[in-house]
Image (cartoon, rainbow, N blue to C red):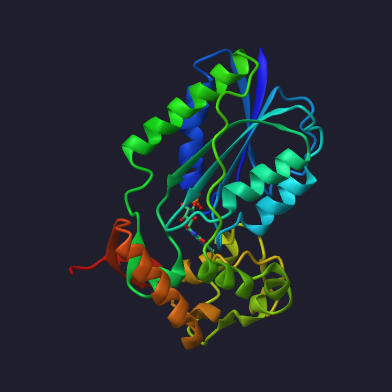
Length: 287
Ligand SMILES: Cc1cc2nc3c(=O)[nH]c(=O)nc-3n(C[C@H](O)[C@H](O)[C@H](O)COP(=O)(O)O)c2cc1C
């Protein structure tokens, strides 16, 4: 039996939904599949696998830092058949390109690339009343993911990289500036310190529990501490039932960027709904 690994990072579930379908497509053949949660598994030696898949959400037009670290640390990729799939809300940017380029540098073989919309459950937009692609991945996208899994296996059986999917177009200038503003060095030295908690906090610990990278700790006196491994996903802020957490996303200086992205994405007709977010819950509102 052939062995495959599918490694994913998924904060709000879209990447894992697509991974499930790809897995279904692959296992229509004779395959044993290991599913790996990036960040919870330290084994980065993939030499024991016949096929390696990496699935990632897009964060600021790139893979999240934790995915970048994982891919950078992968060993045993020489001539290894690989595939990449990427979820995104409004614009994928260089997320897929980054992973595919890094795998190529490690001399892996590219057996397929797949992208899909995922629900854009990101506080930056939700705070401003908009949630993009609320129904994604749709039935159609899930079906395409299964077909993608089958096509990877076809390429594998024929031992050839069928038509290699082209790389995504370069990220536009404004988005590159935005990405620069949240460069890893700035997040590590500065942004993680911008999370604050007001007196409404009742020490429920939900933010600690929900942080996808275990970056928040509750001190003995109950106060919360954010560490520098922050991915800037704002899952903590989004899930707080007391609306007690604030971050750089609340700064007025962020408004022009967020509003620009929202305006452009609506113009591009990316599906969206109007929402209101309070006490850790996002609710639909009428137009
Ligand atoms: C911190 C953060 C940054 C994001 N940046 C982008 C982005 O640059 N472009 C984009 O299209 N979507 C962006 N998104 C949306 C996610 O890529 C999208 O919601 C994806 O479906 C999340 O996958 P998951 O549900 O597996 O976590 C961002 C989401 C978060 C939380």
